[in-house]
Image (cartoon, rainbow over all chains, first blue to last red):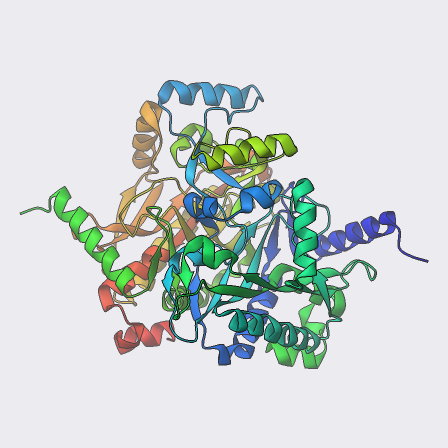
Amino acid sequence: MSETDTQIAEARAAYLAELVEAGHLIPSGVPGLYGRSGAFEGVIEHFEAYVTRRGADQNAEVMRFPPILSRKTYERTDHIETMPQLLGSVHTFTGREHEHSEMAAHLHAGEDWTGSLTPTDVVMVPAACYPLYPTAAGTLPDGGRTIDLRTFVFRHEPSSDPARMQIFRQREYVRLGTPEEAVAHRDEWIRRGLDIHRSLGLNVRRELANDPFFGRGGRVMKATQREQDLKFELVCPITSEEKPTAITSSNCHLDHFGAAFGIHTADGAVAHSSCVGFGLERIALALFRTHGMDPDGWPAEVRSVLQL
Amino acid sequence: MSETDTQIAEARAAYLAELVEAGHLIPSGVPGLYGRSGAFEGVIEHFEAYVTRRGADQNAEVMRFPPILSRKTYERTDHIETMPQLLGSVHTFTGREHEHSEMAAHLHAGEDWTGSLTPTDVVMVPAACYPLYPTAAGTLPDGGRTIDLRTFVFRHEPSSDPARMQIFRQREYVRLGTPEEAVAHRDEWIRRGLDIHRSLGLNVRRELANDPFFGRGGRVMKATQREQDLKFELVCPITSEEKPTAITSSNCHLDHFGAAFGIHTADGAVAHSSCVGFGLERIALALFRTHGMDPDGWPAEVRSVLQL
């Protein structure tokens, strides 16, 4: 008998309660926004170090961008067109004292106090690789570039599923180069990703996937993305066997970002790009679900691989 | 002869250029928003590990909150009253297809496209300890609590000074307890902070300080905070000898957060709180300024202390 939506919702609520009871997630009152325990962070740090060891042959350039992005850069992507329901635009107060008094009065009256705010020059980072592209404008070296990234990304999708957070970290290896280099990177990291997760005892499989594009136009884009075999996810059961959770994805962007940001290969063609993104919180959630709430009690082989 | 404002501005621009040339800061086009090099991140990671070793006797609970905060929690602090010019409120798109088309049309016309956005349930974290307080509501154990925090904090203050970023990390030890416990924590971490920084070859000194409170009312609050000797900063020359930069601060909040969030000591009194906050990016900037752009060439003693 197949799982019902109610059963899946109950399994998610039960796992969230278990994580909170263990102290690994600390509720904030906002669905999908949690503090993390030291042990939860430790698992992520050790997983990241493992990825670094497995990716050492990539000789990647390490860059770390903060969780906000230039608004002008954001406007050059098509995120507003394709995934507006997920965006986070940062606004602030730039008024004078009398406007400040009015704003405070609204707050104290329990009213919306944000009416007088103005947009800043920044938005929340929607995907770890967005801040990279404008910095790569111009001509790539022969052989292209591989960049090691990690940041918090924001997605406005409040959910009671502990694996659907509004803010979480992606660790990525991004490839910029020829079409062949981009596809080879994507495919290599699907293979390597499967092996990395399986070496940690996670029951992952590869699935063709699409991004959550918005509206009627989005339905066409989803179908096209699938027809072109561009995006693959590594999925793992967390709170459902039948609807496993994507914990890592590997995605070819064709010349989408190369064209938007003026990135060219050494021969003058528009660069292609691809990336693998490890969903660090989801991977930790899959590990705690699979091996138990206390990393000290995880199987010796898993502890050894993670150097716990 | 004392430094002029022009000389200080020139020194800041020169240091920023040097950091960009070395690849340690990666410009985004927005003042005060940069990517960081792997070497820059490495210095921060090693400094944090050093702080952890120096703070081991605190037996602190480790919690890691993401860079966004519940809006309801934020509204219970007085940040909107006291520092509205620094806030970051996160807004998103919740409309339907026709509103989406209008928003995209504004974007393509080069107009403000944010008019139809609505506030989310979250704001940017203004200080690393804010997310903690609501989770500590109720009665503290005997002896109070000490919590080890680190997160990115947002402050809307665009600047060409590389040491004044719009988003940066604070590593904190927060003390919740009696008035005596809070003051003792603040004072101990001023002493320990001086020693930590001096052991890294940084020329720090202690200064009485105040928060950047807004407007006319804020001037009174600044004076009161100074009269009560509540906040101290450890300052270090980065781009000016005469106007050194605060790289760490240690601050007593009296019962400000205890009262706002219903935190009590075992004897039923409103809890006091204090915290030390290490400004991780500023500390890295002070280290690169003092010892040079290549950590491999830093003095052996500094490298040894940082276990580089």
